[in-house]
Amino acid sequence: MLMVMDPMQQQPAPPNPYGFIVNPEQPPKRPLLGGNSVKSRALVFGGGILLLIIIAVIVMSIFSSIGSAGTNQLKTVYAEQQELIRIAELGANNALSTDTRGFAATTLLSTRTSQQQVQSILSSRRVKLTPEEINAKQNPNVEEILTGASANNRYDETMVELLNERITNYNQALRAAYDSNDGQQTRNTLNEAFASASTLVNTTE
Image (tube, rainbow, N blue to C red; front, side, top):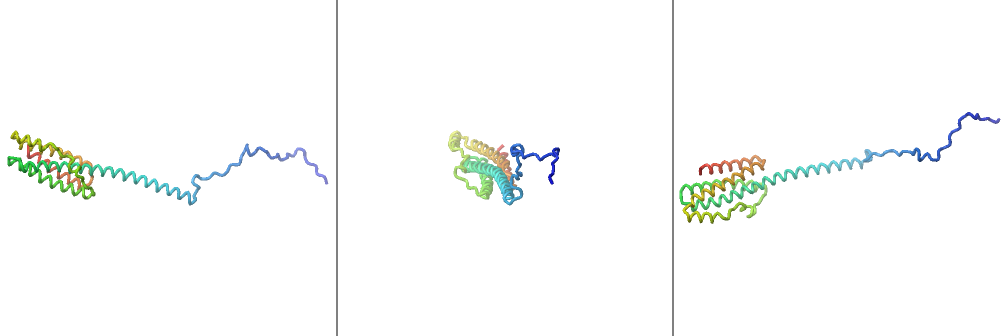
């Protein structure tokens, strides 16, 4: 039996040969790091570890620079003590008056005690001073100044002036070292040295 198709019935549209251009099929999007794969988790973990290492290096660098500054200030204190001791030894041996010899001897004893304590701190930090660092504050003109003063009968007055000048510089170095060091034991040592040196200055006024 022959079937007659209804001419009004809509025929399916033929496929568009250019459809792949007009409406291309979108490939599924992939996660940036591959989703929850083992590789992606390893990358994230490794990145986190690297970030922590960088932060740790920065923090250690900051504390290292701070510690280095404090140690350098202690070296300056030691050098100031060394020069004060040297001049005080000259005064204790060569001054004419009892008062000047006593002042020089007291300065010598007090400064040597404080220097031993500073040396102990530096040793605990494994710092070994070089001869250049020890004598960094040495005044090469001291002997010449004292020789001229002796020729003019002013040895004792000049000795006291030199000691006072060195004590003042020493106190300034102690203040700077105190501000640059946070350790309580170190600060106590510097504070005691400052108190002793300040007393020396007062005895000469």
